[in-house]
Every structure is written in structure tokens, then in C-alpha cells.
Length: 189
Image (cartoon, rainbow, N blue to C red; front, side, top):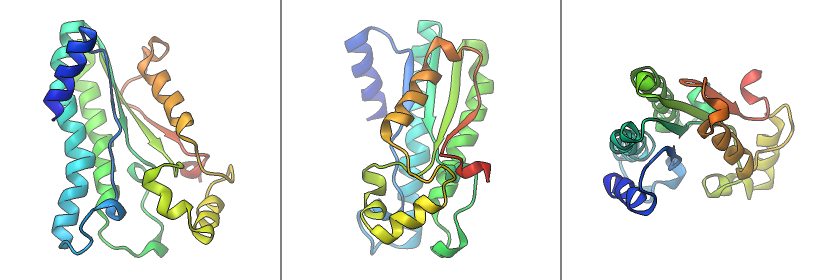
């Protein structure tokens, strides 16, 4: 699928200069909640980390042919911090997968710098998306989440899109290998 996605982009646009790796799931989105812990672990890492790796693997040769490129990976505040202790989910694969996305970002940024390919990672806080809908639809959980953010609100998808547009643009031509928290101050605490 990753290879086919790159091929479709090349067929449609003739070249590939920007890749945004934004697919992601958490334990809450694993379809079979009766799955064993190792099956849940594997599924979350497969989507979040392996998916980022595979799309990048297939996109980089095309970016090299173009002479430049920008890869924007979507990590998480969980790329930078541990989960709050009161969650008590234990051995949650989500932080490990998103921490891996950040480390992959850093490694690729160094490896691809001489190819004029920049690689960065946006680390969003809680954003109103399908991924967080089960949390934001619960009024008590929503207020608990909001209270953790100095800005006292959750983010909107357009705020992540604006950060991705910046990192993909020539305005960020000297930016590579960085985690960019877009998190209402969460990681500043």
C-alpha cells in the first residue's frame, strides 16, 4: 500500500516533494479489544511506526530524483513525555510508537540532509479528531484533558495543518530533525 501510494502521487503530479505521515491509532482504536497484549502492541506499532517507516522508505527515492523534499511525521506529546500515572493502562504501546516516530525522524534527518531532504516531527497535544472522539465526547474526561493544558483548550486540526504547511514549505528550509510541539503548552510544564 505504501509503495502504491507513492506511485499514485507520481502518476498524478510527476514528482514527490512532500510527504506527511499522519496515520495513527491508539489502544482505543485497535478493532479487536479481545486481542492479546502482544497483538495490540504489534498493531499500534505497525500503524504508527512501521507505517511511517514504509511510506518514507518508498518516498525518499522519488524525493532524491526531485532533488529535494520534506517529510513531516506526526508524533505526539507522548513522543516527548510519559502518560499521566492515573491512566494506569500499563505498557501502552502508543507512547513507544510515537517515541519511535520521533527517533526515526531524527535519524532520517541526519541521513537525508545531504540529499536536501528535510525530516521533521510535529508533536500534537490532544486535538479534536476521530482519534480522540471517545475522550472528548465524555464531558468529565474533556474537562480533565483541558485542565492539563496551560492554554485551557484542546487543539483544532487546522492548527496541526498550519504547522505541517510551515515545515513542508521553503520557509522552513533550515529546519530539520526537530520535534515541534503543537500542544497548547502541555510539554512546557
